[in-house]
Image (cartoon, rainbow, N blue to C red; front, top):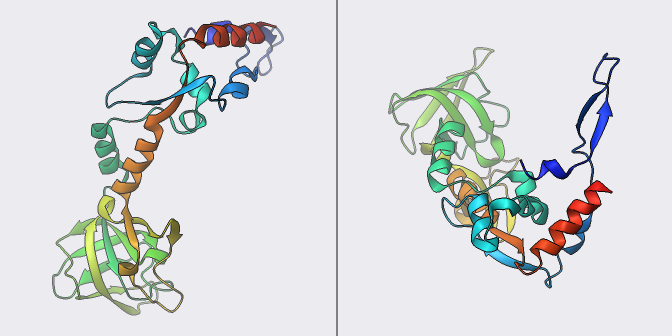
Length: 243
């Protein structure tokens, strides 16, 4: 990669080796771009389009693919979370990361319905095994689910002590369509209190699908070095690396 060829070389003995190897020291830090990335005199805002790659953005802005690496130095969120995904890739990730089904209840489940228990709907006959719990959201995430739990039905499960536990189903949906969180204005809001109160209708539901798409859209809005400044700034950056 062109970006790394400008880093200085150093001799380093790895592990128990007695003779050092020569390699690029990619731990070197210079502040040239960090010093200007919030200065409006040096950057423009840019919105990354669907399917647009870093090399394409560089070529569109600067007439060459060689400055793609500046996008990561100008934008901390790209360094932390990567280049935005396509909508197709987000949908694939949702199915991969959230493949299960979620049973939502208004019942108090802090001390019951533990991971590993099998639950059964007394009306629907639906079953599933609890693999995750989000008690503050009233959620039981089920694997190996069969059938569809009905809203308002009693759901039972026998715990490790042989005691039969019961809850009332409120909603049942795919995991990626269940709530990642609820919002009260701009703040996260738990909807289940210690007493078991559950009233999601008071708040804004943000599903895992909503959340992932919102996070990805945030990555699309970036700062880029102005074309008239790109050569001067990148030359200064590379000179600082070499010095």
